[in-house]
Image 1: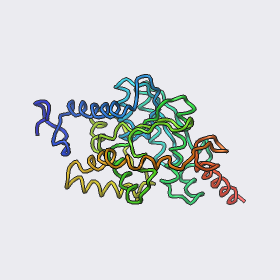
Image 2: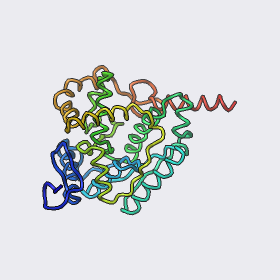
Image 3: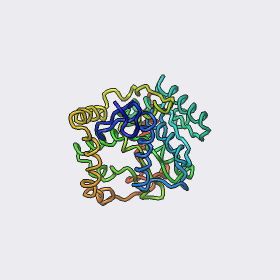
Image 4: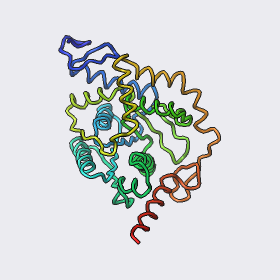
Length: 307
């Protein structure tokens, strides 16, 4: 199998593009896709200070690598979740990447700084671990970006992630979330930071290929709390569809952005008043934000058990 753009031997085929690429041409292709996304959605400028959320996996480190190579001013942000065996390895991987490339890194350990690991939060609040984790990540990423004076928060969500989230929101008709499905979300409140997803034109397989071909040392263990997650079920369904009809995920997600999302944009803010949490000052639609309510319940439960 030959490369689409040069006489070299292909190392990866991309059926949705009806193309195959050698190592060098694929790297160029992937970086151009990311650059196209950044420019097309006006995600970043070279004047921005970008906080990159890095878990240590292939997607987030691919994002950090490409933004570094494109010349953006980036700082990594890693959250230590307190998950046995998984979290120490993830932290070591992120710190190793930052040190190797001379990049600044902010690390927040939820157990040390906020009293509870993610497994403990899930236990004390009777939440699904992914729910406690997701709420904590969203809160801490936005808060850290604000406190550090960053103008943009970048996350490593790829096309598979975006399509799976869209499928879940459509199945449950989460109309406000459907309005927020775009890859670039402008700040709608002084206590919110612009959030971007530059990898949405690449599939998970393509970010994996990029990381491997670039020689990025990523953390490849699956989070133990993700076993049985609904998002993985949605991804599996979409992969089956993609196998039968190459390009289905891309058509589904970008078709929605073009033809479906405009109908849901008003639902983002329709009748919703953003205010500042009485406890922490972050944005909320109630008197106290969901994160502070979760933490308060965890503290009360832990105190009751200790008695």
